[in-house]
Image (cartoon, rainbow, N blue to C red; front, side, top):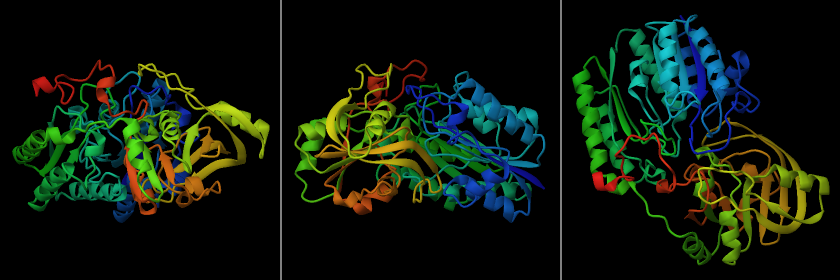
Length: 489
């Protein structure tokens, strides 16, 4: 048996100005064949689990493409068409296909990126068994359901079960090929955009919904996934959904999906969050003895499409009198160039951040003017060691450590979320020696950084990854949708 195992992964923030081109599926563009296999086989991605299961089947495995870009604007037409065609060609050459995809991809010319991709694969190879491993922030569409065989998603956020999700997809596909499973899948959509901070699976209310899905699987349903959705994607299908796959019984799958969806809807008020004023959050942080205290810069998280050049939280922290701050990485190519030209040891005054025009924001980002010393100039290449996104290749370009006294800022030429303390240690900075850490992250920082921290404070600054959904102009979202339309709930 010949099995194609591939990756085409993108979480699209339709409000983000950061482009998503062919070369952004990298770094440096997609991987192919043996290089893709070696890169992802022992990684922390679902693709590792897919490859493991394909090997367990004794299959002849090939990897047509492995493409993953950081969350950003809709995928460039050229990139979408090229990667899709590679996968369609592979579909014609294999007996089964396994894909590590996100589920919230929007292309420049298609709101439902994955639905379009899967429909093309089905057209290229009618009847081809296709297993998907999905992110729990997927915005599931009926077109996706109609054009695949099995489609489990992560059950954890932070995402600690990506490999296991790949394994589950592979096992379900194997049971299908062996005739043990006749998968039929039901989708129940919930007209609600959960706040991502309320979608943490170990905390309420999400824990209750995840538990209900697990109970249904223990009762014999082969696969039940709750997808909280990615709320920063303006499409008709954005929102929470429940996907249930049964063994040949669509009515049973539909009953479970609708029951859990109704349970989520009943908890809708608990899926919202109020936004503490930034000054109040920092005042609370200042009262905490010891450190480090994490200041989570929620609205400039690059894994939600953020530009990673908002200096709002750093500026407000300095205004509140906080000291001993480590912040970054901040993306600012102009500042990096100035500091590289000045050289290590140079003292200079310059503006950092606030370079990116963001039409979706009513108020432009502001740069922060700082005086300090260039401590080091570095190569920003490393591989995430985990526990989240283990194996992810990172290339921040040139990275400068700029010491402005009360704050040390790591400034680079490209983006990465706070997934691994080595993104500071690599540059000679030990996070535990600072009183405050400004991390551009919502939730994914927790497994790696919380063991080092005294406390964490959510900081709602400026940025295109903001969870203040009412601050955006919605054009395509199906209405009414809670909580934007509370009066119709």
